[in-house]
Image (cartoon, rainbow, N blue to C red; front, top):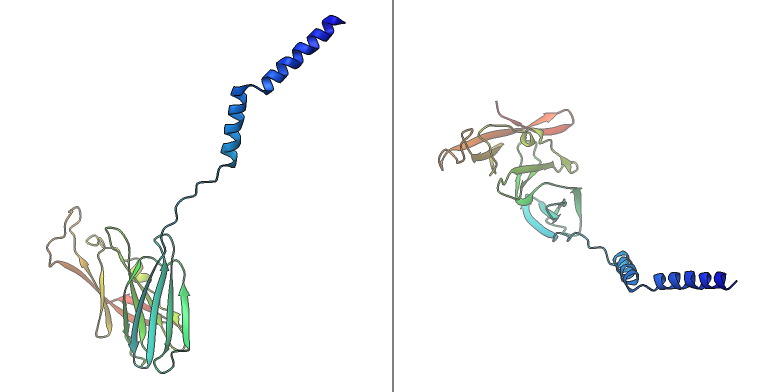
Length: 208
């Protein structure tokens, strides 16, 4: 009986010692602190806004971008110069690049202007992109597929866009394939786009 009692006391002592081991308590506390520690999130990029305003005839036109390089939205608002309290608007989600320039012209000659917004990508390439809209009878996106998919061996970005007459002109430094630098400061690639009707939509197409 005494032997059984002694064994029970010894087992209880070992268990008590294990539960109160300084090393185990330290490890448990570390695990508990780690589990309860606040999660370190990825720092968010700063949000930036850009706005361009212009007038054309009786129209007052505003283009606003808001976001950062990860996600940027474009808001286009078109109102009357005579009544600033009302405007039609449209939102384009996840646009590419920063708002660089706004051009307004009637390239198809129907008496109603279109809006051409030039975006410029961030980084060394500075690739240009056009978001184009007709505004009457409602704001509608113009097809720019031919601009977005342009492929030329001499092309490496650094686009400039401008309106000339009834055309949209794109220029860029021309490079010889395999050469690191532009041919000369005055060597430019030039593409001229016309606005054409395609069913119920408009699209920009390169001149042939």
